[in-house]
Length: 373
Image (cartoon, rainbow, N blue to C red; front, side):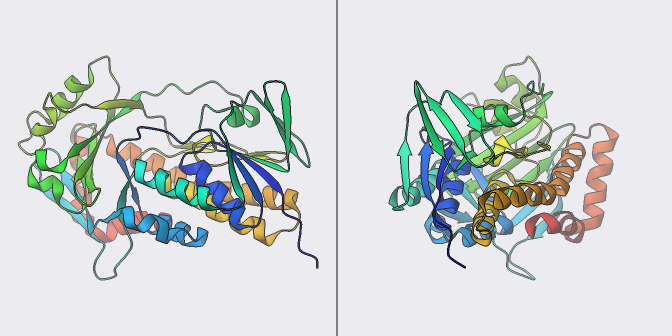
């Protein structure tokens, strides 16, 4: 059978989803144009679990990202009321597993370097004004010019043009929010510098902290019910009475608030030869630390679909159905995890007691199918 001719693929978006999808398509032998600018002034960090590492390996870019990672030896679950340890998920024993943090800016920069170095990837920073999906091709409108492509990959987020084309719908009103910051490790107590992820479970809220940038910085995310209070007031209300966490209410720390909708995915990720990846297709709140990992899995599975099918329509249709099916139980698990984390009053204490009783085995069984999906 003759090898299929390379296709010309457009990718809308130049962040993690767009860059990884572009690298996937180029690795499959296609010519790619990335539309958009890489985000500037990215702060904070993210976590990569074993499935994220596996996706990077399938894309052949694990060596590009590895120098920017900070290995985390464990996940420690702690009570925000007593500071006592509820459970530890050890990444070193009995089996060593890949688990690390990486700065968002460093991850995007590394992906961007890989894309710029690829001979089949080019960039176009012009503003896209419209998208049209066809059964065998798709097109973009830029001012008065129409550009035709064999495939368009929408990686422009949940508010982007590609998502609106495939699933036009009103924005969800979020009742919860995430307060985020990154702080020099030297300005915090030493407990925050330990190379592990620490998860404090509180009364209606949870706080995650872990070091990145080889331990120089600490990433912090507090998830809680949204309110009209100022960010600093919200933080103080949760941590002021905790001797370990009270330092996070310092006036010198700037917290950034983002809405936190429920975990969800679209019913369909595809319209003709336009497909969606990343947040454009699914939203993963930080409850399972899977936002970047699942985005990288989108790209890795897309690469495999493109090399397995000569017919592009079959490749796109099969990939979108399989990927949505794979992600469905992970979305459900993220929703359940969010519900557990926001328990309050006596229910929050019962949750903590159950975690302490179940130990590492309970938590690992909860995460096993996600980390190895």
